Image (cartoon, rainbow, N blue to C red; front, side):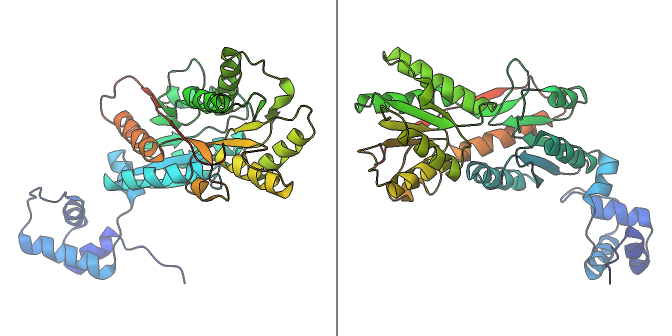
Length: 339
């Protein structure tokens, strides 16, 4: 049998007061005096507890224009980077009284639009979005901007837009990884990741090319391997490497997940890591130090990312928000045994 929600009318009947009185008492903030006798307040709260009353945030939002709910839109719940940041965002927002509704777009722009529309129909107070970026069309975000929806972009951005965002310094992180490989004597360095429509992948590829050129190494087009940043993408990258002559002696991966797949493929082909192929990842996920060969990688500070983007969105929700800020957070090269 379907559960019938308890209403203010039910509490009013049980406590023998008006519905308006029930509403005033139950909506009062702790410590704020209200013009009702203590025994009346106690009677109303006891009736609400006895009936199992749960206030509706949606109904309250219709009155106050705030629901206390934030929409969080990410392209994947399997890519460990996004779940790691998501847990930090949720914990931070909960500490200041907000709940989070999570939407997974699976990297689809059309699904992303549907999810955002659905979240807005629930009257969320604001949105944190890691764009799917199936194309470089920022049109949907300009629509949110014109509608004065509070939102902040996570990890991925659009060029020449004023949108608030929180990203990491992918360019310097990529350069640090490449320079470490070059100092280690590697000269035939491949890179792998994608899709290249993603702003993060484009930044990492550009930094790869520029760093090699800066050190007098001409980038080879066959060494730039566009493949999904997944375990399977890592296996594909190694298969491509094995077919090349001369064979690359190092692989810079755009994600730890791809690097883990590449490492497994090396083991399957009896290639030694790092002696036959040095491997560097990007993110420093929880498992990266636990791989058979601990992974050298560029650490993205998940805790700092989560806290920064939560605070950035809360700033957008103030009565007089300042200009949108585009935060670029520092990264760190973590040297382990894979390179």
